[in-house]
Length: 266
Ligand SMILES: Nc1ncnc2c1ncn2[C@@H]1O[C@H](COP(=O)(O)OP(=O)(O)OP(=O)(O)O)[C@@H](O)[C@H]1O
Image 1 (tube, rainbow, N blue to C red):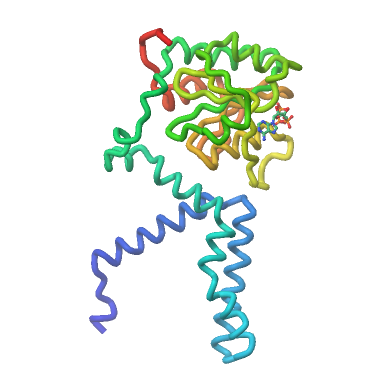
Image 2: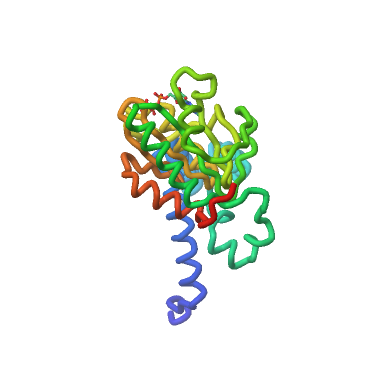
């Protein structure tokens, strides 16, 4: 009896780790089709346990074949979610600092934007919101978003409010799609972002918001949306949408991801 109830410290750690994993898995897939797929698979698994318990051999053998390749099937079906989960761990600042990876892999190619450039970025958003000019600005962090830069037009210019407003000015060839900012440079415009598959979003939110949320789910980038319809600013980060934020909030969020320097060089 004593043997049965003996709980070691490692068992508690084990349970806590499983709870942590399940919680993050739930946070990643809630509101997406993956959640429904997960429920579907869970029901099939329960059904399989039932037919095994009842010794229904034929159906047990058939389902056993299916369950046998279950792990491979799970990797294929949840490819996006597994990618997002690994990204969550890999781009975690604390984990990177702990392993010293931030120093090993940090690229010196792109300089930190200056305080003044950050202000220009906020000012461009303010002006575009005021004039109901739609915009999608994706601010890269660790992931340099190369595969997405490739989908657009390379620019590689210093961040400036005038340039951002010109790019998103209605009917210009570059206004469609997203601008990507890397360090202190506007690296590309007219880039195509992945669309989120979340289906519990406000139905009034269109493709611009869905593309912003999509890129924030598959990378560590922060996406700023200026709504053409409402003239409001929103931000997508780590798979969460922060709607209708103030300029002060935008500034603070940008400061957190860009860590601007005081010098005003390019
Ligand atoms: N996959 C994509 N990647 C980048 N930009 C996109 C993508 N799909 C659509 N867009 C941009 O979103 C615009 C369409 O926005 P839509 O009106 O559907 O969005 P919305 O979220 O309702 O925003 P708004 O409030 O500005 O209307 C397109 O003109 C294009 O510039």
